[in-house]
Length: 410
Image 1 (tube, rainbow, N blue to C red):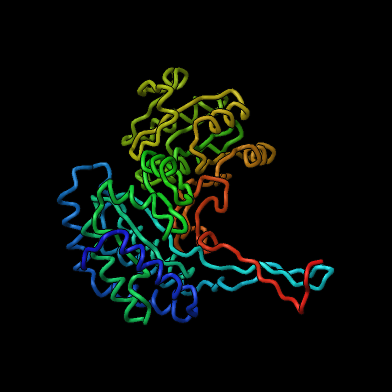
Image 2: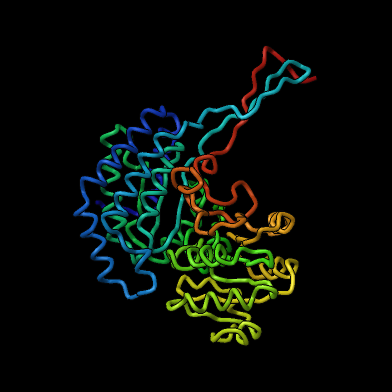
């Protein structure tokens, strides 16, 4: 793939976005199917590119995010196919009303335009982001991390070929070939071309983009997620949910990082956890240390997204204290309460200020695919425009359409 400047890529993608916004759902779905077919037909070339990235990687804790195997590639293809089954929302009129002067005013759903995404070592994001943007009529400019450079460039090459096959401009998907800090800085200033910028990655990346971008930013959040074991919890259920949330895939943002336990069930629950555990480093407060063997937790631990097999533990005297602790230390991503008490479950739902709040279920479900969105562009922890897993509707905005018959304002 020819390496051109990021400004030239943005210019080409912006032009392509205008064409893409006016395509039919049939054309866009055809492009998604062509991408899925290409991924499946080129497993070997993708795996070879990913092997180069893995060989060069020195960040052992992030290898799970970086790794592509045959099943993960097939899953990406399947996600693209499933998106074709979702209805087209472009052109939908959300609401329409008539004014006393006879004007009919409506809000119509339209693409954002050119979506920029800065992300770290997860090559699956390259495909997930691209197909969601295409389905919603947006072009995209993708800047991945250096750890996944070979994987990202190979995926981009295959998607561009598929776009040509479907009769769409290959510039609908642009992947930046230079993953240096300079290109990230450039993207943050591309107001002329980018309509929105979405950072996906660790807290440091997100903070840098939010603080330095002049392009409007949709802030996706790091995940310091909590599971709270209430005094009325089914402890066996609680242990199953916690174990899944912590260990099923610890490197992702919806994994549980912190356990909060009501003091009335703390002894029984923590002893159950200790008996089951052989892989997770437990870091507990003083009361936890008096019940089980664990590493002393610092205040910093309760703010930390580990992305690893480490769990901080806090014992509280009431649900009010649990809610206060979670709201203070959380990154506003996902929190879960395990309880059989309806009043406590509703109090938790009402007062926790995170984007996704669960009753008796694992935080690992905070995911666009699991929510039925086909895939996701990220998980927003802010409160403007989009919040939680961002599917197709989050990649659109509205414009007003007004029908008249000669009205003039007096």
